[in-house]
Amino acid sequence: MTIELPDLGYAYDALEPVISQKTLRTHYEKHHRGYVERVNALVRGTGLAGGPLETIVLRSAERRAAEPAMTAIFNNAAQAWNHAFYWRSLRPAGGSGAQGALAARVAADFGSTAGFAEAYKSAATGHFGSGWAWLVAEGGTLKIVTTGNAETPIARKQVPLLVIDVWEHAYYLDYQERRAAYVAAVVDQLLDWRFAARNFEQAAGARAA
Ligand code: MN3
Image (cartoon, rainbow, N blue to C red; front, side):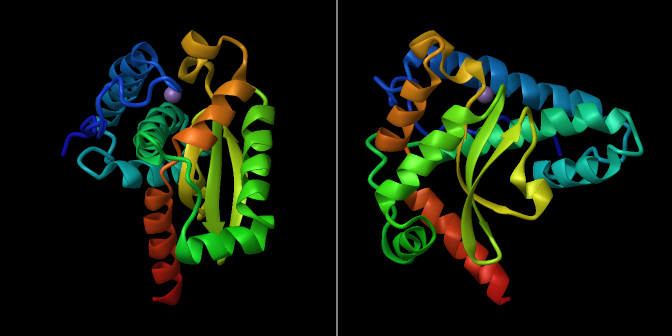
């Protein structure tokens, strides 16, 4: 099975004015597509070809310490996975905050919705260099973590609920160096808390099983 570029799920202008059509089109059609095409080229003949993307991420993460060729596979596969998750973490007119069981968990772990938003913005803005800012579930607790470059919580047995891409290509056309402004606008206006709630329910179900 060839890894496919997944549908974006909304129009290129759907996230304006927070993320411009120009940024979204370039980010999806050039950056994300590039990672998908490179992972397909790199896995040929490695024994990882034909598997689902998540399996390629996990297997290459396990093998990269011993096999240098696995590093490039991991980087491109994880970037393909992370970008697909990022598009689904966003929606037009999002940012309303968690509901139901997830809201109770956010309040327990971060004090309040506002407390979470402040901590998440701070972590995403403060992450040094290229990477990703995540809300994850681990052992029944929510945590904010950041990862550098292509690193991804699924290789650390954490369950991601939401992510923000903090590579410069995600915001530079719209915000130049002002990452804090991009992060604040995404948190307040675009985060898809229904997607986060589905991920949270799956994490809880997996723990109970
Ligand atoms: Mn990106």
